[in-house]
Length: 65
Image (cartoon, rainbow, N blue to C red; front, side, top):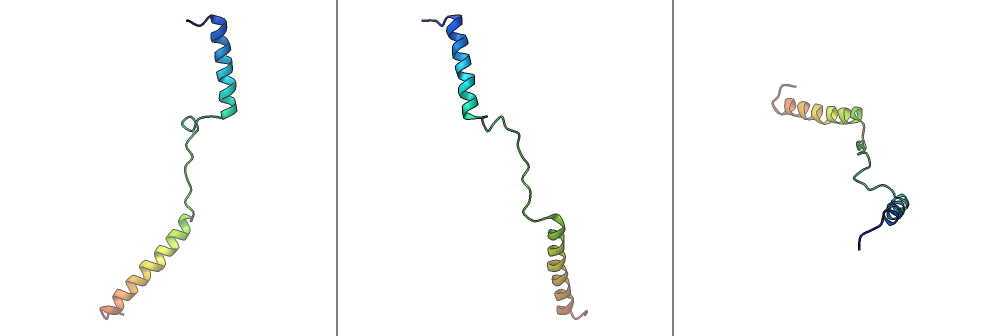
């Protein structure tokens, strides 16, 4: 049995009301860019410490320092 226009409008109204109760689906939400837990300046600082130490160790091994 086909829907009448009155039934169709009532079903659409009900569907909209139920969708509001459930919230928006995750596919329609904007994607948030995740932040790194450590800032770029700290990464640079730790990289400098590690690479600088490695360079000084290599210089010490080859007798240049």
